[in-house]
Length: 250
View 1 (cartoon, one colour):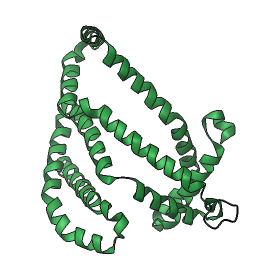
View 2 (view 1 turned 45 degrees about the vertical axis):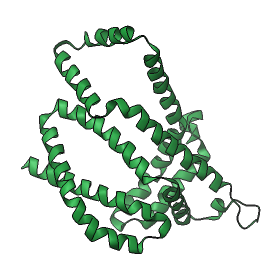
View 3 (view 1 turned 120 degrees about the vertical axis):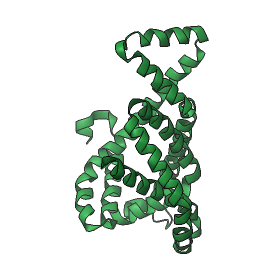
View 4 (view 1 turned 90 degrees about the vertical axis):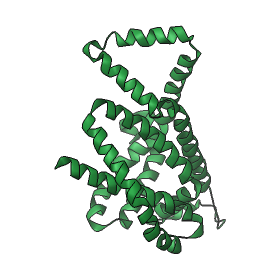
């Protein structure tokens, strides 16, 4: 790994993520396990590379956004107008996309990205602390004494305890809203599908909450019950999206 990607990838981190992916494959259905095992090395490299480049890319775009905010209002407008000059026949479409992006929450995207960044940092900090733990006091780190399946279960449990599903769901909703606004401006068909999916999801969510939530709460440990409501919500959205795409494709 390090030989291929040089200093961009931490070999130890890539191997740790690969072990996590291999552990998850042992808990997956048989038809999916074989693909997860094959993808484990790629997941290790991609995960380690993301940890290395992710913060740098985020800081780069954050600095660009900060530079834009510091510009005088007239200068920022002139730069935007100058960029539109290169759109040719797409000029009206570019304006429509920008306005749709603003109206659907695009102006709050920086705030949502900051929320996701803070959540990722909290998970990384807790994971690093967990990696250094030596509960039995034998001088060896606990994570080094676990097999792949035990390590995956340990990290998944840590993730579920640390992440606030309400905050993350709200941030993802804000990011998706801006993205869907752009799609709506570009393709009317996608807009119809999105609207239908939203309508179906809102209709089936109360029924799903009554039928699924009580049983899910009964079998879920108390520290993980905060995830029941978001999971039911996303299940309804996924089901609604599938139904909407099927209806629009017929």
